[in-house]
Image (tube, rainbow, N blue to C red; front, side, top):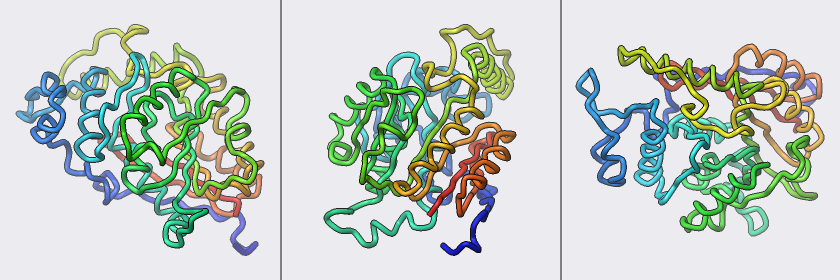
Length: 318
């Protein structure tokens, strides 16, 4: 890219209708077919106040069941499960992330010019968690080659058990342990290795107390939508998420700063670096730092699921 493009910044607006045009869940959930595909979902599906089939999205077990049903019905992933207390991600929103990064310039080039040494798009998931959801979806939807990293051995063990049960993942999804909590890419990206894109869903909060308050707000919003009052939050009633998944020292802003600084060191080994940003006030300082470090293209991609708007920040040095 020529020097005239340095500092380029673009904001990609989401489809006003909500999810990405290629997202299979744009029309909502087909509960009858989901139940047929995954019978354990049955006890969680009820008729809501509007006369529609739904689940209680404040119930972690119900959310886990619908995730397992969606993964089996649409992506041929069986026996997906997470330990008690682990983060339980909403599948439609995670699918959106994968579809949007697939549109970044150059991402599809390896697939078009596949060779024995470089057969597929290579994705790195920083903090894959116990759910491994981004590599699972990237393998299932696009057939990408994925690596998931995490500092939590229990999380990696759970993802390894999911991989072992699914042939479509066995040769496409590998795991690496990050042994140093002060590093993100170092110790994970190997010498001579190249990734087309990295993804990350960083810890939102700066402490456990802040995370619990955030979960209570979610419960209040869900209850308000049902015309109810949410019960007081307790440490065992959050939406799920272990320490490394939900909070870290300095919260999202400090994590982003560390991620961005370390990305410069590995700028020749990853085409696009991307990260979810939940707090809009963190976009501006992150973008400023990315440009300061010499990125040639910076993009802010808005995504919407229901009333929630999240953003992907993407940048490249090449």
